[in-house]
Amino acid sequence: MSGLPQLDDLEVAGRTVLVRVDFNVPLDGGTVADDLRLEESLPTVRRLRERGARTVLMSHLGRPKGKVVEDLRLAPVAARFGELLGAPVQAASDTVGEDARAKVAALADGDVLVLENLRFDPREEANDPEFAAALAGLGQAYVDDAFGAAHRAHASVVGVPERLDDVAAGDLLAREVGVLSRLLEDPDRPFTAILGGAKVSDKLGVLDNLLGRVDRLLVGGAMCFTFIAASGVSVGASRVEQDRVDTVRDLLARAEERGVQVLLPVDVVVTREFAEDAEAETVPVDAIPPDAMGLDIGPETVERFAARITDAQTILWNGPMGVFEWERFAAGTEGVARAVAAAGGFSVVGGGDSAAAVRKLGLAGQVSHVSTGGGAALEFLEGTDLPGVAALRKDR
Ligand code: ADP
Ligand code: MG
Image (cartoon, rainbow, N blue to C red):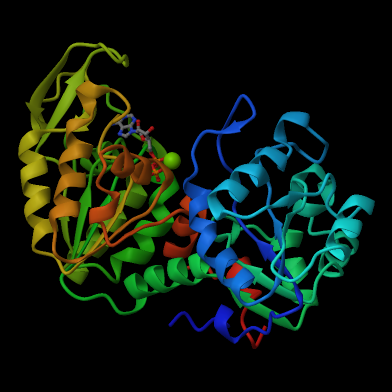
């Protein structure tokens, strides 16, 4: 479906298979605080074990900036992964050093080993040829299952697959690429995109690429105020990216030319102070007091947005509708999340914070796909050929 070499077609029995996973999990005093990423890596590792592979997992964790940071060792993560897998999982204390080489050499069919945090070595992020060759030299085949890192041209993401003939996309990566490709290439119509979040400048690439593909564009979050300002309405003290107003105005004109329906908020929740317990009121969008800032979309907007979500066949949502971390400004995000979850169409939530909001509301199971790759998903939706995906193609 994704045009990528499949895991099922890879010869793995009795071979050492290097698997790039995303074990970049939150830690709390040395224990894994959220298992989600580990759980998502289970299917690929289970299948490799069943087929008799010797699995070597590689990941980064946090931002050690090229040196060993004791608190960012992968051993506790490997231990937790072993619990979830229901099988022993070893950890090496280095990546391409003596310990890793010895442990790889001692692997039997079905065994699993986790290398040390890749980013302890500055050569990982630099895609250093020697480091990539040393990593590649540990195995005979490569599987990429770290969609969240696919936009980084690092050694474990591009340098290793370039050096091995036998490569494949893992289950998680193949699913992400399949879902996001379907949105860009062959969406059922009508296609509604909902965009929000902190900064319009972060989302301009996605907006630009989606404009030629969607039927409706619903805009909330802080970024809606740049849209509202661009349409000539005063937004008081709300966050506007002045240097993007012209770009947004141009975007709105192109949307109109193409017949894309753009929905901006008709009411907003405003406050005079950027604080969790600040007094809030809902006002029509053209009546924002000069000293007030909008921190959420209002209830009438939620209703209008929901109508355009419910009747869509394809839905993409990226970016919260308001400061959803604070209860007083969470209703817009919750309302949109509930509409997306209730919709019958093919629904995708992408973006770190929007995905977190959907999970927090317990609605992840009612959405067709929640993307795990925040930055990677955004770059994919911008139309970028991600380096980690390109490195897997057979004609690479
Ligand atoms: P995602 O991770 O889903 O792509 P972003 O990172 O772009 O989303 O934006 C998420 C952040 O945007 C949240 O922390 C939220 O508080 C903030 N945000 C949303 N609406 C507003 C607003 N009106 N004013 C200020 N911040 C906002
Ligand atoms: Mg974010």
